[in-house]
Length: 161
Image (tube, rainbow, N blue to C red; front, top):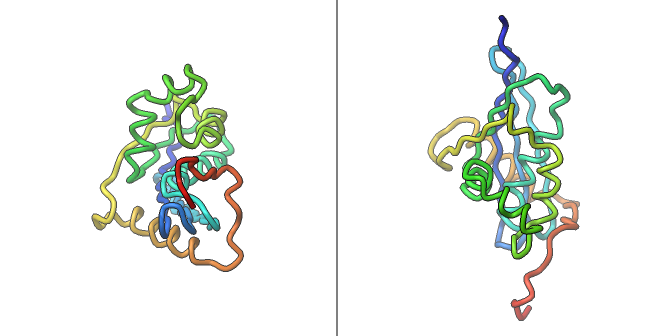
């Protein structure tokens, strides 16, 4: 029996200031084939965690087939632990009360398939080629002219300015 096609997704988010201008980078590879795609985008005012999570969402939304095994590699403990340690299940049960980035987590849940998608944490800035490439894409995206507006970013209420 043939195994399902495998896709490796590498993601990273970057932010200059937190909040500040930010971006994400994505490298997607079809395992066993010489097929690779890269994506990135930048935003005017956002946070690092939002960009880390948005990178994963954008990548998963690009997968067109249902019958594929997906491994997401991220240097974000925030994203990987939320999924792999099942924090997300508790957050959803509580209606995302007191959870940061509920708009993105709800969007994530619409596309996440736990039966064919797993997450692996990789140490950032540790000479992992795809992670380093994602970092370059994310940083460069955050420095572009005409950055997009992160409509879901909400300034925390306890800040004075």
